[in-house]
Image 1 (cartoon, rainbow, N blue to C red):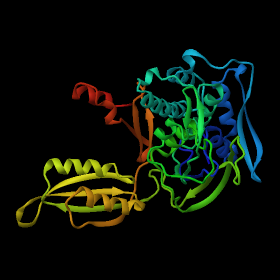
Image 2 (image 1 turned 120 degrees about the horizontal axis):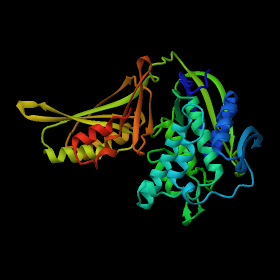
Image 3 (image 1 turned 180 degrees about the vertical axis):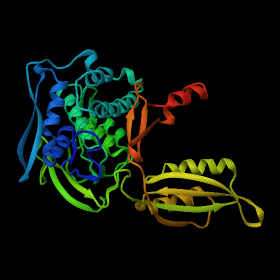
Image 4 (image 1 turned 90 degrees about the vertical axis):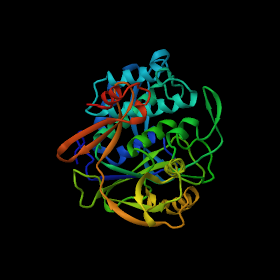
Length: 399
């Protein structure tokens, strides 16, 4: 398996079980345990982004709950903590993009950092350019983001799934005082993800861990893994000892069956359809907006029809995750006037896609197309503030 960042993850599926939780160092350690062939690449990238006085990355063997695991930490040097501009989003991004890194590492690491900055920007109601990191500003967080970016680049083309995340509980100390767990940034980044309360408190998912997961998963994940041949398992150790369970993040690597390098693995989706002929245009628009916000819904479309007795009618068609059928059914009957609903599961094939950011920090969807081509387009919502159609079209092209 190639690890050069040029489709090194094609045909691979990575499934994460966050039994202990997820932090940046746990993600890196788990993957390096499963893929030791990537250790040299990751350590070289970390060394390129950290000044010598900051210290060096160390991958160690540890036992967590009797499980042979790996720990990833910074062995600190004499450098002072980061201050001023270098602790801002722009400063940290400049550091990453100015380093001599392996192909793809800077792009992925910057995209991870951008997710954290977006969350902080929304929480504190400030422009993203003014975001100042506190908890993730030190050298070890820069190390984790860079190492995760290196792994994401080396495994580009892989697919991912994730079991429900541990909720944790209590409070965490921040620069803004004590905040409830999960931290606001973590919740913002992981909107739409599944959580479970296992009764064990503390911060179980960190903002850096959340941003890494959101980046590689590219949105709320599928909890089920596809069939395939198991290739490797890795365990990333957390720093705390948790009562009754091993504080580890487990990753399993499988080789997808009948993998086609041009396409993502086959997927199954739920299709729900209903027709109405007694709703106004305003009511239809509002109903469609509500249905799009239902957890598990992937898309909602409306079509104009000619119904019984030549009446104008509208068809609602929902595309959703199969496990969301009960929620979708309830929502359709609550939001529309229909008295009947048709549904079924369909197979689909989707192209590999990932989220990136352009030079201005706007989110860009990059799609891998057959024959090794890629297309990229800035997300429409990020262009809404531009005053004219011509400007929006010009900005939408991301080459």
